[in-house]
Structures are given as structure tokens and as C-alpha cells.
Image: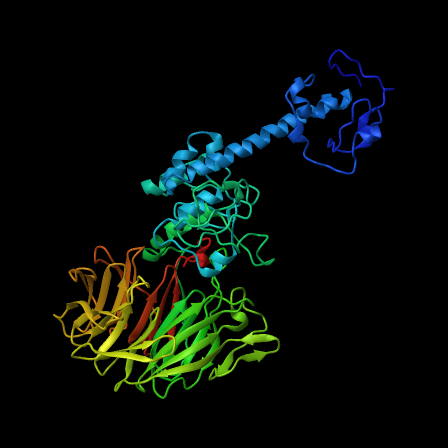
Length: 630
């Protein structure tokens, strides 16, 4: 082989330095006059040759001898073949730098799909960058009310690989192959704003390696508000909340959840449509639980858990059915029964799932209210049923929960009573856990407040002229306030620190049975068969919902999606448009008697009935990532 370089011709008999090393990485330069090649190169040490690359081969300025590149000193036959590849490498490194800087700029722009669509139309490079997991995760988490479950937040890993399937309007066909048309990808966000969801391939389904530029190990933000830097590549970029435990490398093998954020976003946008208008492919799934032996008065869900209380004097802990990545529903499992939790019916409960401990097992606290006039405080151990799949060895645990239970090598859920709150002279109709207080209300027309740390009684409030049927906390947990609803027809907001009334409303009906407080809305259900919507800040009556034919016993609200549900003695559950007051539909139900309690979440509706059953309705089955929405 011959090579022209500086007019010289390659002489095969001339000794070549290339025989001494396998990559072009000098660690020592020959001293002047030293012709011993073995002293000139180190074949056992390899560094980045790119750091020494110069644009021209030849002489250097006499003041820049220390910048002489080893590339210029290579044998001619190597230099001619290697230099183009190194220049290409330099160009790719420059492109990565450009991409990083552009992402930094994009993070200063509004976090909306419309903005991302605008960016994608500028150029091919901007189009590719507009689908960065970092940008789409930011768009998702800055959308009001869009949130992931704690498990998804802990295990989620952003990916550029979408799930198998494609969109047809708001319908997801998981049997279809994804489209690779970049035009459809680029028009994704435009159709969100325009409300036109008819074109296939919305958000695109181009296949990229998992976690491309600024995507590898991209983590899931824990809140919409920036607080933590997203990574080394964006040290000077606007900060974005990132959980330190969610990268592929930091999460236990087999416990990661890949999330394609454009698909996640669209699925969350589509969900309210399927709640309001169920379709064949995304219809609601109904599961009926009949384990209680008497009326079920109360229930609450949080994440993957549900707890129910009954006239049979038991409290039951459930692990909700898993929803797989394709939106298919598993089975809800009864994990633990607390027998004889009280000396009377369990009328009310409230619980919190605390952060998992170092061994990955969940802990929690619960308070229950009973017709026996007491409230119980409980410690919950979720056992090996903490984050992650339910262990195959797990079986139903039963008992009073006074000790930790084991079956084989698997810790079972257990409940232990750690305190009893006394003082009421009538049944405890509702209970709440505040940040610093336990709050109870009773048929005796009073509210009692206890210290959360040591259960010490703090004060009693002669709150109403009739039984206090229900309590709801201020949605801002930093503000220690509750609202109470009474049989006297009024609702009152109370300051728990002082026991003083802040403001009140209602008063023109035959008695309030229930109340909820979300955002600036207070919603009540009453004995006049009405649901009423008030402003919490002004107490103004904003809207009345008419349609029930008997007492409205329970209400629940999803402000983000504009939905309100109510249930009562007419044995129906009704869904309303929160902002117009229009009845959307009566929900299909298996209940055959009075509805005592309901709870609406982003994906599910839970209801408890006098017919001894609990019903779990899962909306939008078949939507991708359905099980990740909080």
C-alpha cells in the first residue's frame, strides 16, 4: 500500500511504530535524539486519541511544541486510513454537545405538548429531540392532576421504545404493529390541542433504542415542581425533580418499569373519555368482593391497597388487582382479616401508607371509628406485600393483628392496635388522620381532637346541633383544618390548632349525610336527595345536582377530570359533570341495597353497600400504562 503524505512514499522496509500498540494512545514521547521506538510508545495504556487530534498534519508553532499530536507522528499507512474515522468521531461528539445544549434550551420553554409539537416542526434534529424522555416526562408531571403511583415513581425508567400497538383516535389497539411514520409522530401534540384524535399513529410509534440521548437511566419526577438536577448532561440546565432510586442501574433487576412518556401522556388524556363513554375495547371491569358477612360501612384505597370496615366488626386488608402494561385486570386478593376490631360495627376508617423501610417492606397507620363509641389507632405491616409483585407463597392471614405473622419464609400483613381514643358518648361516625392530630366526630354532636404522637386528648368542640355525620380534611395537608357535615343541615370549617370555626355554609336543608373537600370545592350529599357544590373560600352555593330519589349517603370528586360521583339509599351510583351539573350516566352496579361509601380515583371507583359487598370498577381497561396512574 502506498500513501501520499507530504510527497513521501511508503517504504515497507521502514520500521513502523504501529507494530508496538493496538490503539493510537501514546503515554510517553521520545526525547530528542532518542531513536528507540520501544521507549516512545506504551502498548499497555490506552487513552482517548481524540483529545490529541489536530486538523492539520505537519509543523507546529515553536511555542506550541507541547501541543504536538501523536497523530502527526503516525506511520503514513496508518495516518491516511485512521484520520477520516477520527474526524467523524469528532463530529459525532460535537452533535451530542449540540443535542445537550438544545435540550437545555427546551427545558426553559413551557412544558406542554403544543410546545413540543412546535419544536418538532423546526428541523429533523429538533423533531428527534422533541421526543426526548426528559421533555415528555416533564410535560406529564407538569400537567395538573397527572401523577404516577408511588410504585411507578420508584421503579419507572423512561424509554424511547413505545409499547406494542397503535392509536386509532382515543382507542388503543395493542394487537396492531406500531407505525414508523415520523410525520405522524410530529403531529402528535397538535391534535391534543385541536381535539382531533382521529388520525392513526398519534404520538408515533417509532422504535428507538431504550434511553437514547438524555434518556438512558432517565428517572421519573416525583412532583411537578423543579427541585433536583436531572443529570450530569444537564448540570447547568433548569432543574427537574428526579428520584435517585429509579435508574436501571440503581433498581433491582426485574423491578424496573419502562415508561414511554408520549404514550403515557396520551393514555392519561384518553382515560376521562372512556370513563364518561365506555367503549367495547376500553369498557369498565367490575369486580365484586363478598367476603364480609354483614353490611360494609366504610372503605378507603391508597395505591395498591384497600381497607374495608363492616357491621361484622372486622377490618379487612386487600391488595388490589394488578393492571398489567396492556391494561388487563388481575384479581383483588384478601390479605388480612382483623377479627373483632371493635365491640360494635366499624363505621369509619382512615389510613396512610408510610414510606417503605430499608428492607423494602411497607408500613402504615390507621384509625377506625365504631358504634362502640371508641376510635382505634393501628399500626399496619404490609409484610412482603410491599412494593413489587405479590409473593407466590402468600396466603390469607387472619387474626387480631397483635403480632407479626409468618408463613414459611414470607412475612404476612399484620395489624396491631397501638391506641384507643375514648370520650364520645355516642357512636364514632367518622375519623381523620391529620398531620399532627387525630380527629373524630360522633352521634353526640361533638368533634374531639387528639395529639397524633401520644394520643393525648386536646379539645372537644360542641360543633353542631345534631349528629356530626362526616369529616373531610383541607386538601392542603400543611393547613390543619377539617370540614364537618351535620344532621342539622350545616357544614363548618374548623381550625384544629385552636378549635375555632373558620366559616360555615348550608343550613337550608333537612340534614347533611356526607361531605368532601377538594381544591376550593366542598361537596355535600343530603336528606333532600340533592348533591350540592360550594366554594370553600366564600361558602357560595355554586351548583346543585338533582336526580337521586332518596338520601345521598356518599360523594366523591375527581376535580382534574371534572367528575363527581354520588351514591345513596336509592341503590344507585351516579356520575355527574362537576362543572355543568349534568348527569353523565348511572353506573352499572351489582349492588342490591343501600350504597354507604364510595371513592373515585383516576382509574377506579370503589363502593361499599348494605348488601355485604364491595365493588371495584376499573375504567379504561386496555389502555397502555393504566395501572401507573395515581
